[in-house]
Length: 82
Image (cartoon, rainbow, N blue to C red; front, side, top):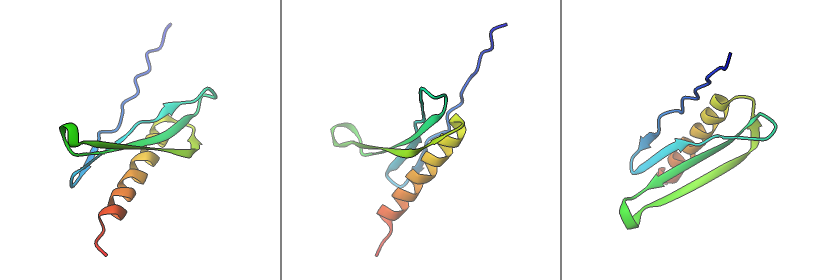
C-alpha cells in the first residue's frame, strides 16, 4: 500500500507591513531545516528577506514553528520604537 503524506504548511502571518511565512526544507538526513521569509512592500518596491537557521528539526512542523516564531521576533524587534 502506498501512503500519501500531506504536509500542511502554516499559514503566513501578517504584522504591519510584513508578511512572515515559514519555509522548512527537508534535509538528506530526513530531518528539516528551518527557514523563514519576511516580505514587505508591493510590486517593484517589494523586498523579501529569507533567513535560514543552523539547527535542524525532527519534523516539518517543528521546523516551521521555530522559523515562524523567529520571523515574528525579528519583525517585533525591527518595528519596536526606542
